[in-house]
Length: 118
Image (cartoon, rainbow, N blue to C red):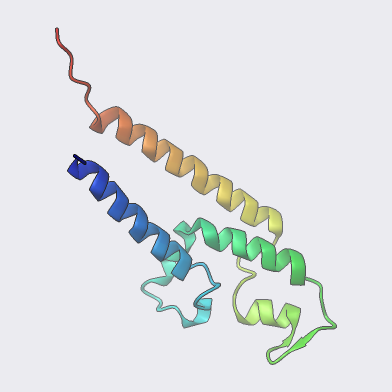
């Protein structure tokens, strides 16, 4: 029988994953996100991966024309260039990894108590 702790963890992980995907910039563009919710996009690791991919492929491309202009103008209009370089987005991902691992360590250390016989 599953404990309620696992069920709560599953619900929270599903909620975080949905929020991270919605705020990554690939489903909803950054200018369309409500300003009250926009600060949560910096917790989305998918945002940094998507921004790194878009910057790598389209930064410096002035020949391809989109409805928003060139690719560089499109990146700027959609605010995908908020970390300006690919390495800044990689550092953002690594920073989130360290924070989440530290949070997991602290939760396991202080919330999980082992039952001892003596």
